[in-house]
Image (spheres, rainbow, N blue to C red):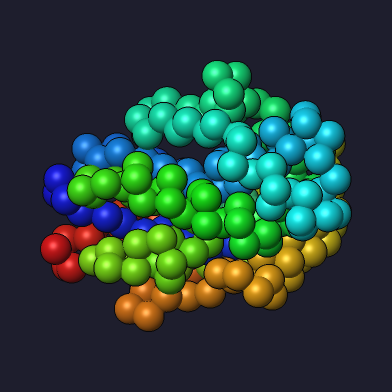
Amino acid sequence: MTGLVVAMDGPSGSGKSSASRGVARALGLRYLDTGAQYRAMTWWMLKQGVDLTDPEAVAARCGEAEIVSGTDPDAPSIHVGGTDVSGPIREDEVTGVVSAVAAVPEVRARLVALQREIIGAGGIVVEGRDIGTVVAPAAPVKIFLTASPEARALRRSAELAGTTAEAQVAALARRDTLDSTRKTDPLSMAAGAVELDTTALNLEEVIAEVLRLVKERT
Ligand code: DC
């Protein structure tokens, strides 16, 4: 398992994070949440007062953010310039604008390079949108998680108190469109990926299915 890379892609609310952490834990692998890195970059840009509607301004500054990801599946962490941002990156202020930052090619180039550095010789489960297509296309196990829009929204509104399922469906649909239609590395299923629809599955069932696929492919 030491050199193994498991690529876990899919839209928000498909259950990627919990499943990826569970798989990493079960196999004794590291875990990398690449969405947290795009969120951390966005948090830093907001703090710096960068105009996020201006891709050139975002591109010009993205090299300055020092992003450090901790890869323990039991306690994943994310720091920018030494500040722990695990809490703030989940707030609406960041969630509402992260897709715009993630669409800037220079941001993607910088974070993809960082992700490849962290992946190194492998032994890791990596979750995101472009892991199987761009970051680690040679990964022996690539999973594309999906779920119905209603199931995804329900999972999100259970996580975020104070939002209704309807508001979540609308917000997720907006983010999906932005993430799937951007020019650089849009969300799409990689060649050789296995699609796993998690709508009717609980977390244990999703983890068991991924572990079965890992066994089959390694
Ligand atoms: O998985 P998440 O919701 O934390 O991701 C936050 C945003 O980052 C989301 O809008 C898509 C983007 N993202 C991306 O473009 N590429 C990745 N590998 C991971 C996330």
